[in-house]
Length: 427
Image (cartoon, rainbow, N blue to C red):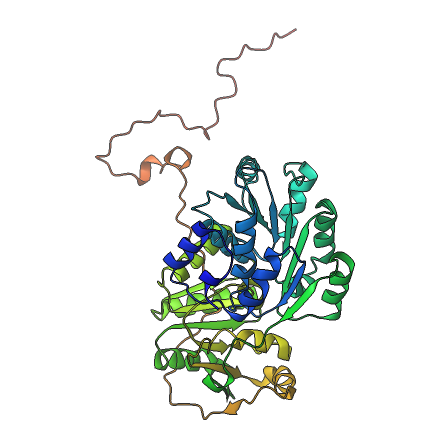
């Protein structure tokens, strides 16, 4: 089905064509007409399937510019929050719809100011609750509530925050929920808050025939980085994503790759917001070849042209492994998923291999050149004491010809006891 065949506002259709879109994806084709008809919708779809536009376009079609906050979208991560907000801004620009993102890690004052003119608010749960407690957001005109990546919000422990937000939204609203998997917890929330929802499921967006899965069994843990670097240089073309288990490991790996002249960016939940935004901008402008990420930070991000996935640390569950490798081999393109095994990874890898859908082939370790891998990096500290705080050298250590602009008396020299004092009266 083509976008011209659905009943959307002409100005939105114009922007869709300007962005180079013509045909709907499966999730868009099934969801958009139902949302336009006013149904509560639950969509099960993977990242990259086009689910953001599946709820973004009908919302942009139905809300009225300048009528206050009419749509609230809740996302689990800041990166996804910014990405969804950008979609609303891009496709709603000709209708002059104002969208804003609300997340932690930045000053709240500017957000409070922008909320006065916003039509669509995309938020993370914590900062949204902050605005609710401050009473800086008005929900009286809200007609749409979207919960994106709902299963991930359960994993991250946001379910109570999400329910608190739901209770603040007017009852007469349309609720849309999207999740990669519909677990028992997700199902319970659907039954509790969505009245007669339409549950729409789509098949995997990844072509299994185009995805090659391999692993390397590395005996020496110290060789892991050297082998990774060798494989990165051998498989150039497109973008590579390297998944790490912890934020600290992601930071250390990024610094070591940068020292080997690799164009690399990192993204994880512990980064300051300005650094996260630099990484996202580099991705969008294709200025980076390698992205080092944790599972949580990368979840929901729509990253295009991914050529290879590297599991530097093996995920703990088969589901996490599926989410990782599902970022490549999309839309008919070929991709490869490479897992690097050391002794401590075998337990997790057995769980991944236990799932029937994963056929992972073992490869021989190629000839590679060993390179150093540093764990500790010294922080640059260029701060020096200002001149007025520096202690000057004693006169004896100075050059004889150097002009002395100081007083002869030093602050540390003791004054004679009786100087300037009256002698005690003797009686």
